Length: 476
Image (tube, helix red, strand yellow):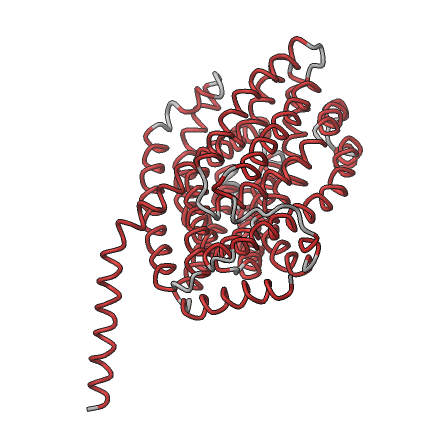
């Protein structure tokens, strides 16, 4: 009888959970879309700043374009990806503090992140100052390396602005304040076009003017968001001014910030290595061009699941901080379904435009045909990348950055890149083989993250979030 009663009790609980899930699913979808829409816009607008600068430089000649493109890629690999990853620790700290209603701690977390990221930016700026020497040592063309070195040196002020900007973004995002971020990013993008035109064409600075335009635009965005945080009533509870408490517990922050950075960097570096490997294939100009187009297309499409990723990390961290384990679990179920739907829709669009998409980048028939062959591979990887993106957002919301870093290390460097080399160089599949290897990495990544997500004890995660918030409060 006891066994039967236990089973009946369990069934009753499951029915209640199902009922709650059905009642709250639509509301959860609305909450996530309300967050994800502006976050997608913010990601695209901030991503456009560097792209617009390179487009302006492209009108100065092939050498200037090559130098600016190489410098931008180098800056992304060595600096921007690192800072973005480290700032993602605030998804956990600020999100869970907000959910636990420890609002004043959010300002402390943000200041601590700003302090750490600015310190990290100093050695990175030294690397940027020596871009020319590093690229030449890596065997790159000397004239392009010289041009890239000049561009990178003039971009150094933007590095510190980017560090502060990412902290402000996470601070506001975890409070569900996303529309001001979108508005200020839009204003910055419009200003950037004007500043680029003046500095590139009217001032005589050329490509250096484009780099300076990046500096100005990033700092404009930081100032606008900083003023909003200081003067807006929306942040009156979470921002109480500068405090020396932010200098405490920096090693605790680094325990999450370093794995967060590794999660982001390992993925970005793997894609960049794929482009470098394409230069070793037969007909490297064609392979590199098509791989670059494919990567650019994938990066643009990735902004949508990245917005969903930010939304779910905020929802999960807020609900875990508040002790609402069931709502946190619901948020993950909802975002996975949304990620699947997004992947199918975007993948369908990419496949349907495969025969004409190449014309947006080139007039060469060989390139256009190759792009049409590659886009189905890009659509498949985009579907998987969308799933891993939302699952990684859940990992950040829970504070699983160390697990995520280990999964990314194994997926990309033990599975993905070896498979890319095997397919491309041993089986002679070429650029398609490189992309198939990355698809293998994404498949491994998704499966590992899914296993951890499915096996999650959400009540235990809520307890850990509470302990993290209140232990931090005691330390501070």
